[in-house]
Image 1 (tube, rainbow, N blue to C red):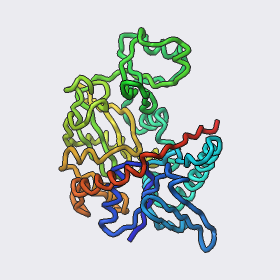
Image 2: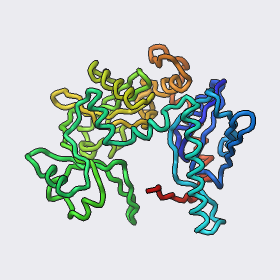
Image 3: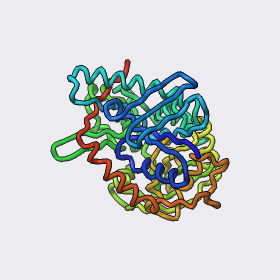
Image 4: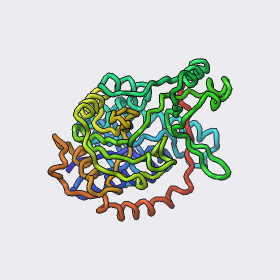
Length: 370
């Protein structure tokens, strides 16, 4: 029986399904919801007879000697917002949240050095950098769009206004504005010179600007080690998804399994190796001329939705193989015979049972050190 520690967020059904799947084959599994610390979670590190990490939280109690390389750490999500009881004065809550952040950050080096990490903590943090991704993708042999990353108004205006090419603007990560009439989410958008705001606004918020690449369709490639699973997304058939397919449910696009050309497969594996990742989700465009163009890699992207929409693609079993240390993840001989739909009902029930426990909780954001 193995021990698995999952860093995750509240209400993450991906983590619940994977935890249930691991337990179904006899493993001990604990979901470490870092945002629950400190007021809904107790954690300790002790240094007698080894170095022991003890966590008491949503899944009961987890105890492990973190100097021994016998646990697997699934680095799903490490949340930097912490729940501090409202019984504390506001000024004290800020201090408590800041110290909690320091504690959680202090646990990560132990895990990175001692555990089998999917993905390694500091490698995953590097891989979240979109500019760094593009550099490493180019080195790996991918075609990438003409790109400028900037907050310099002159550079942005020149790039957007140059030639007859259509340009695209996109944020480093999705951002949500809360409004009276609902939430507004930033996504990739075509931008023309007349769309650009004044210089003070351009300089205030750096963004990624790229040449717009015409699409025949889009591809999501999920990398389980050397096992690649690619699906075609027919984003050009729905107006709302033509620029950014994430603006609609992927169920509306169709999820069709396709083969990856050998040169693209080689680039995918080279990129994972260069970023020191065991898992990653790569988004690509296939042009009308059948040219494959790299957009980005999400080092811990969502993946079970592929199997939820197309049950013939065994995403859960492949991921459990990766977590449990299969030397070669292989869908031709599914090791566990696990299916997403086998756990969906019980995971949904577990999620519903947990939601009332979280409703009154309010986290405290911690300002990053400068």
